[in-house]
Image (cartoon, rainbow, N blue to C red; front, side):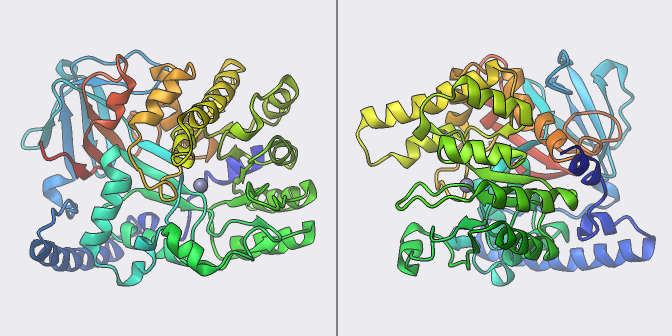
Length: 453
Ligand SMILES: [Zn+2]
């Protein structure tokens, strides 16, 4: 695991945001193209009556200052009251008390009095799998902007890990965002999920249609050799990690052998990339952890309590857990209330035990599979499991950047880091649900979402 952490600190060469700063000629080419695209988008947006948040970065907004408010530079430090953040060329130039900073004149400012400012949020479990994303190449920019806003940017999400979608389509979405055409989050993706043999091959396309998902060719594997071949194919195509479905929760509940999990994980780690697993059951969880995965994308309410043996195996492997608590209510929404409650409480109990054991938690909600995108309840449920505001903030900021090898570039508010910031109303340290009351979402110094009132 140490290997991939070092390796993913390398810049990702296929991303446009890394190419933009190389040389003036390329930079101006990209900016000119961006302006032309923006003009087209603006005309279309005006026609459709939609807001345009995508703004060209030119001299007038290369600098931006957030003035006033309470700033949590990281979950571990005391907040700065009545602070200011100076942003220059997409990066944080300075942060401190408002009175101690020299604010450049004639700079664009956002008044954040009465608000709280934190680093940009990660949602480490999303999917670009609903049919609305199916034809990214042909979908107009304003429509994609509105969809990204509804699912992510309006909730302060500046980075996502997509843990299962059609890679070629998701890559196109990322390219359009990185070209500056669409205001959206940084996207990392595992592409297609590796399923156990027989998990989905019997599923008729109309079922996927009824569930609202795109039709995707799903790789299914039974052996270590097949898992290795399938993961090599995905990694060769440029995915940022591997996602394994350790055990299906529907009959006949096929599972991946531990050797298959290990083969895929080792190949991902060899290329400096993380591996994720959907555990479902105690057996799926233990096989995933023993197989070396870096992130469990869910708790496992089917298996009730995580006993000492399970918790010890998880701790020893230093796996991170994404709780997805709200999802458990959503999954059982057609069932009796008592069944819902029991299922949800099992998930809450597992998270409580994991946090008490000092385990790493990453925030993630499974939006894109779950059609209800609002994270407010997830925050409240994480608090119910015993996480305080600072622990929840860590799951949104420092924990994911450390896990994914990004802590040199982002995750805190400090000079030199990417200007990925969230401004929320009120005080989330008093009520954590305030983390969902977003005023501004800023990525790389650009306002990519702004509340209307
Ligand atoms: Zn999912």
